[in-house]
Length: 99
Image 1 (tube, rainbow, N blue to C red):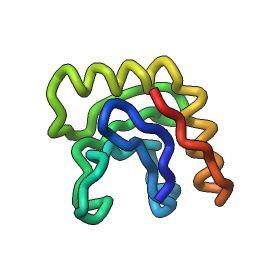
Image 2: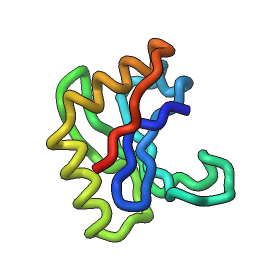
Image 3: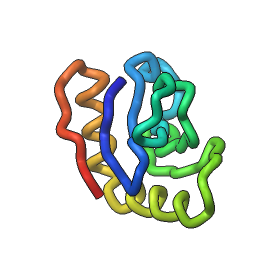
């Protein structure tokens, strides 16, 4: 698992297995849960399509306010998130960003 950022009380991350998927996406996980990471995912957000910026919510259990904050930060920092995802998929260590 590659943790990218902490926003509010959520962790944004990617999984190395996601490198083979046809669209890049970020998993949003509730911070501090004792459950497995995948079992605690509360949203999946697509961030691109065919290499171009296109942010779509695949599914979400977040409130509209929480989702708006997270999507806004992803949108504003899209290039940063893409670089971090490249690094995770390349096996490089990334520094978790806090927003």
